[in-house]
Image 1 (spheres, rainbow, N blue to C red):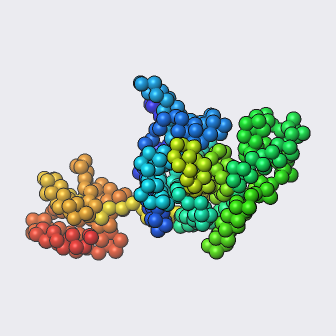
Image 2 (image 1 turned 90 degrees about the vertical axis):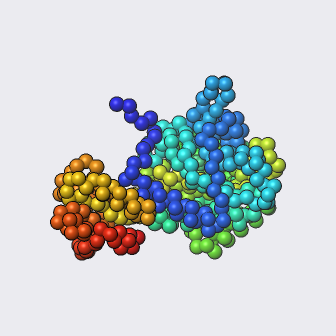
Image 3 (image 1 turned 180 degrees about the horizontal axis):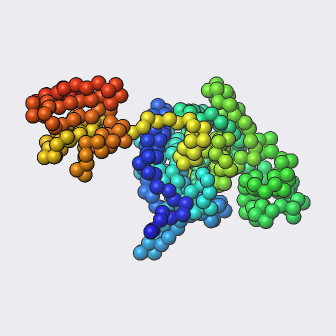
Length: 418
Ligand code: AMP
C-alpha cells in the first residue's frame, strides 16, 4: 500500500469541522481589520526565496523543496508566504492603487524539516502583511489580530514575546558589540553556533544548546542598543499592547531566522504544544520589498501555524465544534420506492436542505441506524399503508415528535427543515 509522504498529513472529513471553524474565525477577524485575501501559486522561482528569506537561514540552506522543471528552471514549493506576497505586490504594482495594502492568506507551506509533533513537511499557515507604512501601530495591529484569533479559538496558555532589532544601522553596530563579547568565548560555542558566528551572528540566539544558552544569557541586549527611532517605535507598540490588554514579555533573544526583519519582531508561544512552542511569528520587514526589486517600502506581518494551533486547541480542549449533521434522512420502507425517494431528495436539495438516503438496499432498521450515525435532525419515513393513503411520517430526532405529512404537501416539509 502506498502511504502519504513522511511529514505530510491527510485532513480527514472528521478533522474538517475544526479546520473550517478556524478558517472562518481567521477570515472574520481579518475582515474586521479590513485585510483582503490574496492567493499565490504553490511554487515560485527559487531565487525569490533565496533572496527574500536569506541564504544563511535554515529554511533556504536546508529545508526547501527545490526541483528543476523540464525547461531547467529551478522552482521551489513555497516555504513561507511573505516573499511570495511581496513578489505579487511588486509584480502587480498593488501599491500604486493605494498607499497602504493590507493582505491576508491561508495556504499550505512546504519545508523539509525533521518531522515531529507540531512539525510537518507540508503544513498550513494563515497570516497577514501590511505593506506601505512604517507606523508601529501596524506592528501592534499584527500582534492584536493574531492574539484575537487565538483567543477566539479558546486558547489560554499563551505568551506574547516582543523584541526590536532596530534599523539596519543600529543592528550592524549591535552585531559588532556581540562579536566582541563572543570572540573570546567562541571556542566554547557549539559547532552550529561557531558557524553562525561568522555567517549570521544574531542566529546564535536561536541555539537550543544549553552551553550556548549560558554564554548568550549575559551577552549585551539588542534592546539596550537601539537607535532613537526604533526605541520610540518599540515604546508605541508596548503602549498599544497595554491599551489592548495584551500581556507581553520583552525577549531580547528573539531575533528570528529570517534576514529581512527590522525593528519589531514577535512570537506567540503556547504552553500546550510540547517542544515546538511557537504558534505565531512575525515582525517588520522594511528591507524586503526593495530587496525583491520594488521601491523602498516599509512593511510588517506575521504567520501562524494552523496544525500547531489545532494541536494546542486539542490539548486545551478549547475548541468544541458541533458534530456534523444533515437536515433529513429519507427512510424507504418498501422496495420499489427508490425513484420516488430520490426525486423527493432532489426537490429538497434544491431548497438547500441537506438530504441523504440509502443506496444499498438496506433494511429499515439499518437505514435508521444510518440516520442516527449521520446525526440527522429529521427522518422521513416513506412507504407502508401510510404511503398508500397519500401520507409520509416526519420524525424530529431530538424531540421524538412525529407528524403525518401529505405527499402533496412537500412545502410544509421544506418550511420545517429550513
Ligand atoms: P515561521 O514562518 O518559521 O516564522 O513560522 C511561523 C509559524 O508557522 C510557526 O510559529 C509555526 O506555528 C508554523 N510552522 C513553521 N514551520 C512549521 C512546520 N514545519 N510544521 C508545522 N508548523 C510550522
